[in-house]
Image: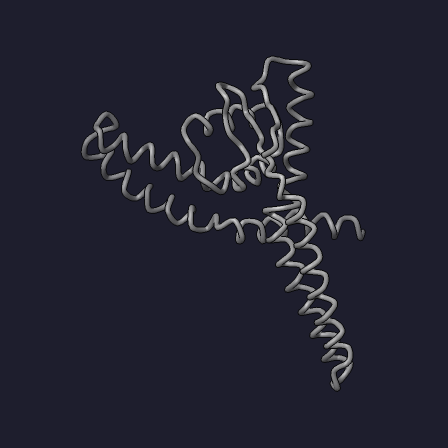
Length: 202
């Protein structure tokens, strides 16, 4: 039962928090605006006009950003979509695209993991844990009713868990996503003709 609850929280609430910190709502709004601009242009000029082509390209780019949380060059968009057909987690691809860790070398998909990600991850954990313990200690020693203390502690737990989840999107989650993606596509490469992938550090 506890395992199911943890999976639900990670799968649903975790995705909501990730989406919020990634700013995907802004891309959703832009996509709707682009769709409203594109429809009358297609009706008036057809899909062969320069303006319709421009708006169509913009709509596709925003649609990609809505799905993968950041815009990308047409070449990178094509390679990511090709890699997605090979079965890796879409969540891993969007996290890496959000962190600008994906690039192309010809038809190769390359993951660039900055060396500073690990130090940032460790520092982030230390800051969040220290702040959390400080607030818990202040709440526990405050001259207030036990019910109020418990409510404050739960509130602090929710706030810091949310902050940690959001910050980890740019640190520990990116590291784990890169590792999983490399492993998945490396296994595919040994058994089929797929988009090659390389991992580089910078």
